[in-house]
Amino acid sequence: MLSYRAEAYISAEPRAVWKVLMDLDAYPQWDSGVSKVEGTIAHGSRIAVHRAALPGRVLHVRVTELVENLQMAWTSGRASALFGSVRTFTLKQTAGGGTEVVVEEDFRGPLTRVMKRSVPDLQPLFEQFIVGLKAQVEGHA
Image (cartoon, rainbow, N blue to C red):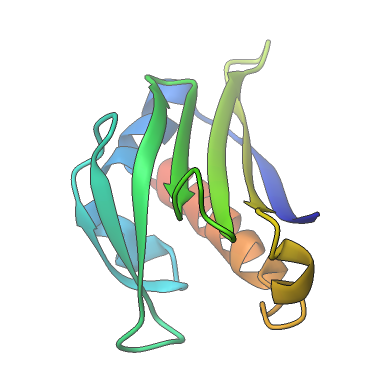
């Protein structure tokens, strides 16, 4: 199994966090790991993620789960793919009115063990993402 995870407490309600996650055009302003994100978030839609560290390389994902203010999942590869991943964004309101946010990605498929050697350590990108998301939401809440 190959997976990455980052989490944070954000001092804002889930709907404020959700609003930032839904604004793909603004991702490059707060997520230093991307240069551009294209598409529209809707169940079944496709999104193109342009990585800042890999100019010219685009990650194509499909929105496979969408529960407003709670959870979203982006899937790369196909169900029958030999190697793919699912990135999940989970929001949980806390008793104090803030939000616990977890972003995790699990790589799947029969080639995961082989591909694990060639996949760079993505943990720093997950940490950058969650720090940027927290700053963006709390700066606008």
